[in-house]
Length: 328
Image 1 (cartoon, rainbow, N blue to C red):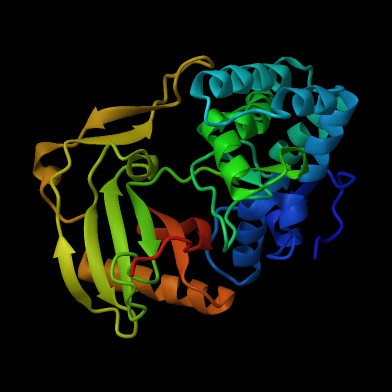
Image 2 (spheres, rainbow, N blue to C red):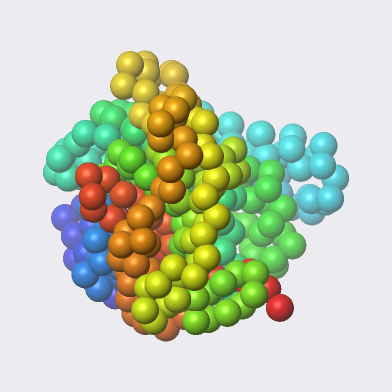
């Protein structure tokens, strides 16, 4: 259950939330809190709670306006859907962020050491066993400065009304006005290598194997589909690599240190020629990562879809959710 914090229920540290707190922290935030409590190496962070989101909507008078926009919307009418989504997002991003929220977000960010962070959407209808909603809302990488964190939080709220998110919720039977949005603010890991891991083979449904995908650079390269990752199939019990597919990688996504506030904070750079054809992970690293996956699966009691990052020889888990799409 949610533990007491010093920000009146608006902000919670990862250690203050667990898997049963999705209604307050969103699915992602609740899972990261649970992982932290379980002793998994998770970059430290906090959650701007769903209570903050709902209070913001209420005080800005946005809730009835958004309900009016979405009421009776035919989500199969693509042009209408996109128009409504644009209007709803503009409502959220153009409303002033109140001092009662700016102050605790800024203070919490400073308390966690400031620096670069990842700001990730964490909706209540997200990372669930029955509906993951993965990729429907926004993530912002390498955000730095309290004002930029506040702006990213507001943009994450607005992304609850992306066209694909509205469409998905409508077809999954979720009430738009009942879905809350927590926002994760998490220490940024400047990964040299990263990727995803499934603790069940999502194609064959084989629960005795782990499937790991890996790329050079930040993991958004995998999520975006712009880079074809290496793939390693691993025996879950022993950590032995059963099969591997190594793919040459010509570009990687990394932090852009000279970016200004209005520029993309990450950019694509060429992978040095001598690295392009190398496996992203050694057998030892694959075995270590598979063991972490096994630990997480055992803790949650079901197969997991996990995002990981490797920095200076250390694995970090930046997200975990139940596997919701499994082959036959």
